Image (cartoon, rainbow, N blue to C red; front, top):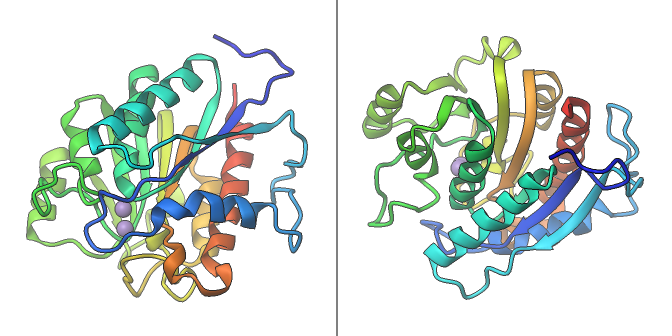
Length: 275
Ligand code: MN
Ligand code: MN
């Protein structure tokens, strides 16, 4: 259903959940910190691509999904139903996590409404564990669950630098296309035919650029390299999430500013790709 032209096409949605993290809590505080950084007077609200995000006809803050104190399955159901509703009313959804587990219900909702969905997943970690610490829905497994659903056309990963034997097997089993950190030569020519969902884990960045994450994995992407991907990949972006910012480890809100910058540029890309 097409939305009325006076409505805001993009809905910014907070997903404050971190009870599926394997190591540290903190990402549930991220949505509020990213919003603060987004509106910080130290920067303006224009995207590099020329959209003025102070124009409230372009986007709207849909607030946070009320996840506090919810059991995992109830939280996933609520994320899924909230996003489904927004998609069905013609909106594009940009979610702010949360640990990476939130991407399972968020992407499932998109896949059910966009035939032939591909995922562009930027992360230090492939998040393909069959099971970690007895929780098959932890933040280390969302892409295993999504590939098992049979609804995902392609999973393309960028920035990976933590593959172990098990996850190599999983990647081969699901046919995942991986651009490992040690060879990014194919990234500039990433191309999709159908709709694309972007899942951006902040720990894909080198900790020097983004220290506010739970899992430091040195040797990562620069902020500019991620912006280049957001701006330039060939395909139609239809939805996205930014996950794994941990405000407990973010002195001076450096990483929150990085996440806010990505929020702006992803909004610009969504506006550009809107049909
Ligand atoms: Mn991740
Ligand atoms: Mn990660």
